Structure formats: C-alpha cells, structure tokens
Image (tube, one colour):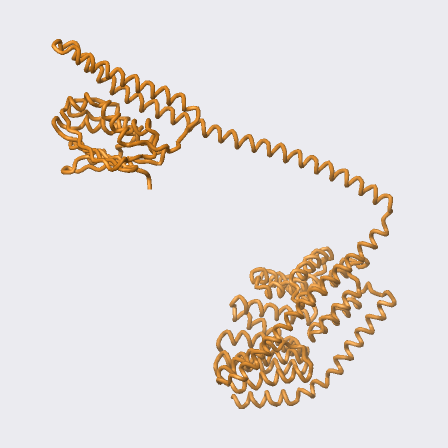
Length: 622
C-alpha cells in the first residue's frame, strides 16, 4: 500500500507541470470576466443578475487563487458606498466584501460588513442570497472558534436549503462542505463524514474538481481525527489530485501539507514526509504559488531536530522566523491599507453629501444644534451640582449621625460605670452609718472614716461631671499614666473594704511602670477589678497585684468563677453573685470596664484555677 501511494504522489507531482499549463485557461476565464464586467460598467448595465453573478464569480476565483488585492480593487471600483444600488445588489456586494475581509484576516471589519449584508439581505427576502449569507457567516464564526454560533447558522442555512428545494450546484456543495467542517470542529465525526460524502457525490457528478478537492481534504481531516491514518492518507492523495485537475496549486500544496502532517503526527513515513515538505517548498519558490512557507519550514526544522542535524535545524529555524515575520508584516500592511481605503471612500461620500445640501440650511441647523447642545450641557452641569450637593450633605449627615450614636453609647457606658462606682461608695457610707449608731466608744475615728468616704464619693461625682463635660467629643487619645500612682489612689479608696476582711495586699512592681491610658479610665478599670477581688476573697486571705509597662494583673484566692460563667463574664446580661460576706452588686461593672477599655485598644483577660486562684489582666490588644 505504501509503494502504491508513493507511485501516485510521484506521478501527480511529475505531471503537475502539465496541469499547470492549464493556467492559461484560468487566465482566459479571468480576462473574459473582466472584459464582460468592464463592458457592462461602461454601458451602465449594472442592475441585473448577470452582472452580479459575474462579479461574484471573479471574486471567488481571485480568492481561490489568493489574489485578494485584485478582488479588493474590483469591489472598491464598484463603489459600494454610493447608494446607487438597490438592496439586493448592495447585499451581494457587501457579502463579497465581507468574504474578502475574512480571508484578509481583518475580522472586525469583516464582522461589520456581514452585519450590514444581513440587514440588506433580509430586506430583499431572497432565499438563495440568504442561504449564501448563512453559509459564509457560519464559516466566519467557525474560524473565530465561535462553534455554537456557527452550528446555529449552518443549520439555519440547511433549513433554508430544504425549504427552497432547489439552488445552484456550487451553493449546495458549499453548504455540505461547511456542514462537514463545523461538525468536525464540534466532534460529531460521523455527521461530518456524511455531509462530506454528499458534497463529494455532487462535485463528482458535475466535475467540480476544486470543490471535490475541498471535500476530500475535509473528510481526510475527519479520518485523521478518528486515527484512521490509512483512510486519511487515501483522501489527502485524492484531494491533491483534484486540486491539480482544477489548476489550484495552492489547494494542492495544502492537501500535501496535510498528508505530511499526518505522517509526522503518527511517526511513520518520515522520509516521505520530509520529501513532501521539500517538494512544496520548491513548488512555492519556483512557481510562485501563494502558500505560506512558515509551517513547512517549521516541519523541516522538527525533522532536522529528530535526525540531530543542528546546522539544518538552525537554517530552517531562521527561515521559519523570517517567513513568519514577513507574513505578520504583510497582514498588518493589508489591514492598514483596507482601513485607509474604507476611510477615504467614506470621506468622499460624506463630501459629496455635503455639496448636495444647502449651505444656509446647514449653518442654521448647526446653530440650532449648538444651542441645544449648550442647553443640554448647562442642564447637565446643573444636575451634577445638585446631585453632588445632595450626596455631599447625605454623606456628612450619615457621618454626624454615626458620631452622635457613638457618643451617646459612650456616654451611657460611662454613666453606668460611674454609677456603679458610686453605688460601692454609698454602700460603705451606709456601713459607716451603722457603726456611728453602734460604736459609741470610738465616735471620732468612725466619723473620720465617714468623712473620708464622703470625700471619695465627691471625687467620684467630680469624675462623673468631668466626663459629662468632655463627652461633647469622644476622645480616645492614649495619654500615658503612672500605673503605680493610679493603683495607690484606687487602693486608698478601698481601704475600708480591705480592712473589713483583713486582706493582705501583695504588690510586685517593675521600675516605674506606665500604661497608655488616661488616669481616670485606668482608675475606673482598676477600681472594678479590685472591688471584685475583695468581694469574692475569704477573710484573712491575700490579693497579689503585679504591675509592668502596659500590664496590670490582680490575683485573688477566693471562691473562683464557675466554668459556664467564664465565657459570658463580660456580657451585659450577666447576673452578679453575692460575695463572701453576702455583698451584692448590679453585675455590670466588669461589662462596662471591659467595653470602656476596648475604646482605647486595651482588653481584660481572665483565668481561673483551683490552685492558682482567679487572675484578671489588663493589657493592650495584639
């Protein structure tokens, strides 16, 4: 089988010069079509189906032989922007322009022309033209990898074809080949083969060798994807033969390139694959076939790499690079030329339209539009100012409301904390009052203590008044306080409570410790912790106080804290338990002290152990 294919290839390639001689027929066909079009343009006999068919036919021949510039010159010559054509004629010309731009690779411009052609074609309600449009737009979306859109469009074309019942043979073959290509892309291989064979049958019947070559190439590609390499090879050879018979050397080169890729991808007939690549390179260079050599040079570079031929590998790598670079430059140049042509064409049309208009009416309209624009701009600026003002005051109001809410919340917490402290002082006043009535033998000392406690209550009330005065603005600046000084003041306030339970205070102080808190805030927090430590300590027990920079710790050895109360110790709804001497409380002292310290980035931590006692620690948040 391999020898048979080699013989076919050699015979085909050896006699390619015979088929190339048919190039004269192609040139004659082109010349005849150009002559016919020129005559009809001179006679202004443009508005007929024969003329448009001639235009479409010559554009198609130019595209098949990669003569894109010639096709573009022809379409530009017909000046599709002038508005002298009816909708059907415009639809044909715009569709040809879109197809041409698709092959140029100018996808954005091609999309625009496809959209305009679609609108015009729907107005004509011409089924044959609509069928042609959907076939071409489906192929365009397929090349852009928009497979879902391509599938919908090609099925729309098939539906139009089935309803119409009859159409041109070329269009039928074109439709079946596009269906095969799209089904191949979306991995529906059996359907692709089915439509390829339908296209092959029609092309063989009517001797459409170029379309037959396209169909054989497509079915060969499908079998390659199905890993049936012998079948794929068979169809690629038949495609090459058909392209030669159609005098389409570009198609022949592409079919042979596909066969070469088949051999390389499957790792067999590598010598034959290399020879095919060299033959294509030689044909493109000697016969000036418009076929890109970058892919061929890439294959030859890979072949040299397989055979460890470094000089040859470097040679083809440089050729591949140069070819790829030239191709990119050519595409960029073509795109720029197309954009410039379209720009000048539109500019010319606009200038002609301007000359048709009355100059005075144009000036009047311009003035009117300027007046309207000015009013719109002024209205827009005024609207922006109003919206900006509303937004500005809205944001400012929300900010002030937020500050007021924070301030109100803070005031309430401070009032509650200081009220709690006053309650403790007043409790001690009541105790001293009882002593006044019961201790007749020591009235002077008792009165002295009562006076002292009244003084403390006054200090607490002064603290309350000072806080109410400073609450106009919530200030959380962290002014440092001497920790030992504040402790001594707080301990003095609790002297009576300490002496009542005969509690020993043990202090462990580092060198001149400070805490980044205002002294009144620190005093409130320490007072609550010391008051609780005394409240829950046993008679003749001890309390250990440790102080260092930004750390205050108080440890008592009293009744401790139950495990289920530890997690909600700082909650607002906790119920206070009685102390060791049945002291009562509101249960909110710790909650308020905890939240007050949070405002200054400090926190209270608590631990409880049967042997180590209960320890409360004030320190900065990490």
